[in-house]
Length: 264
Image (tube, rainbow, N blue to C red; front, side, top):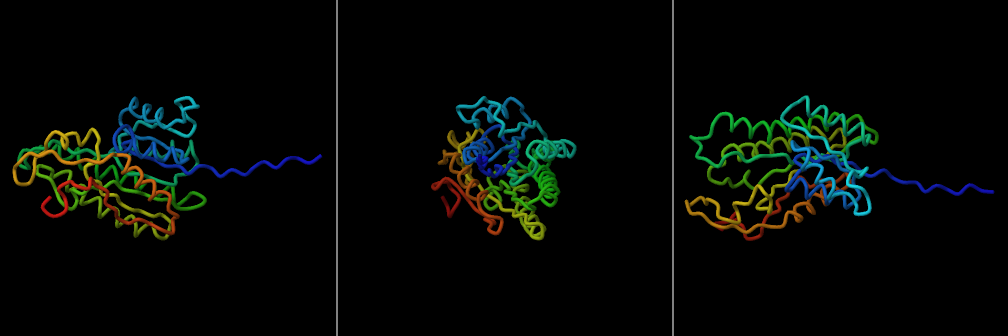
């Protein structure tokens, strides 16, 4: 009597998404989970992360899917970032993708009225948080077997064309481009690829003002076109599914008719 062969199964790739409780982070988590990835969800609000996990779970399974992990975290805190990545390693054994997405815009006030605390909040989340997560990802990806992985940074079209009253946000998104380039260079020898997605006018909670009227450079207030956030998620999924021998270094996905190219 022969023993039937047990089919060999390849473990699902694992992604960590910061800012996963809403908006772009949630959309990317759903896209990756739908494509068979295991997803670790990080963000400050535990209830929002659980809702993302529920939406990501297959309909036939319980909301607490074995392919999802929720880790409430503040990415601007080094100790919490260390704990986040330890939880991912403990649960999944490796990390194949970091989507550095956590971010905040800050109050839309004139530069001279922006408080030091508000400036620091934006810098701490958007830039320092991205650095801390990338650093922790490097440490994990260098040591795992097979070695390597991918980091995708959430940039913004604001890095190229700022809005009025956006000095903190715009400054951090310019810095994100420098971070992306340095990560790409330093990651080469470790099979770590890094790319950046600059996003313009995806329909999320953060961009609600686009649809009601937002300040323009000429002083007027105008409603701007937006795109479905799922289109952003599909772009991230494409970048994530490339082999590590290929990389989308920089990409822009935006609402086609938004005032960005030329004079609008």
